Image: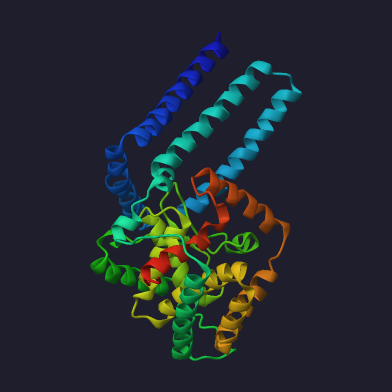
Length: 361
């Protein structure tokens, strides 16, 4: 009887959670008004509240939660094994149902706090851009434009194959990113950013093995930055993660917002980082279509840019392992499951936004 009562209670909670998930999915599918309410009111309020509260915590609470979940999962699996070994089938059933309930609850929180933003498609309207398909000629023009800018900014920083430009400490760099968003918000109101919540990840070394420079914790709203990567990458990474905090979930959109903000910063390190990243995306895309044109562009890059690229390769070569491959596969599937059809290659789709921004025809 005791087991029946427990199972019934867990079953009711599972049913309520499933109903909530289905109700939200239905509202997003059939009500544009509700979708607009979520994107522009509900998510903004949730994100702002989390930043207000957790921005005062000096460490990444989200990273601590992840560690606690991993420990909880290990304990849970040990309990499952113990109950199977002891043939305690009734208790095993309760344990399995508790696992299902936990997974559904985590999924509901994930979707409510972040996941539904993958259905958001308002960036074109927010920034008044018309993004279309592009051809090789437009891609070459974009890469050429970005190369000229990144060359100029590299020279302004001091073009040297020995210059790494690690910049100030992370807290100072975070502050510069906030100032950049304040400036951008005057021109693009949808990019206004209040209540800072940007933190260094507690798992920098692990992230290096996974090839991750930053991420947004969807449960706490904290923007995490891997500050152990080469310093000249940090300005753009920070701006990219803040874009996620503002609700721009698709990676190409976060890339474009990060570029806009960093490129309009008075800090030349931010402008260099933004144009360096976008040049790399555009020249990679160009290489897939015309290796000769891509090679011609690379030969025109000043020596310091090639040195920075070598620094990135050398840095990640030290952490090369099968973990990186498995992580890429998992993340690719995660993005595809959240309406990003091109998966991990979605990042490169920012070139379409850049072509529309520069009005390349």
